Image (cartoon, rainbow, N blue to C red; front, top):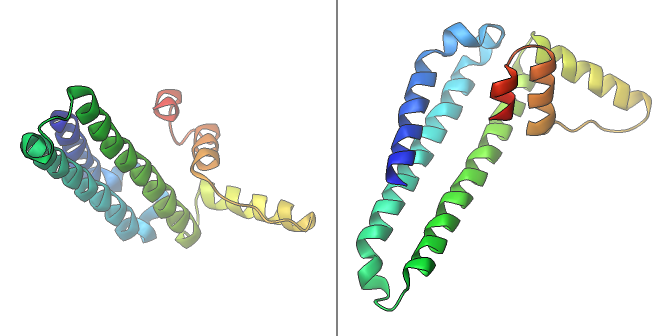
Length: 147
């Protein structure tokens, strides 16, 4: 598990340095994009640290704890960090889209809000509809959407 988190950390580092080439229409929100990946990188490091600490302290926490119980606790830790990270990505994406002055997702949001307003409803952005729209607008590949 520590190796998985370290690979995530390395991936975030690679992504951070390629932002200018990949996200051209978000130029004015580049600091927010940078903050998102920095936040995720730090969260991955924190998860790695928790795993190392828990693994080191396991024998001292409860000598009777079975391996299965230990694995369940580690799984909960990793799963909660995964969910937290996805929620963070959604939060940052919403802010980035709202702060952008142009781009395919800005246009999409404007259209959805206008359509909802005509029906006297509200439109809510979620990570899932942002990703689906990103695929339709060919901002991401089918494989990226799947992942």
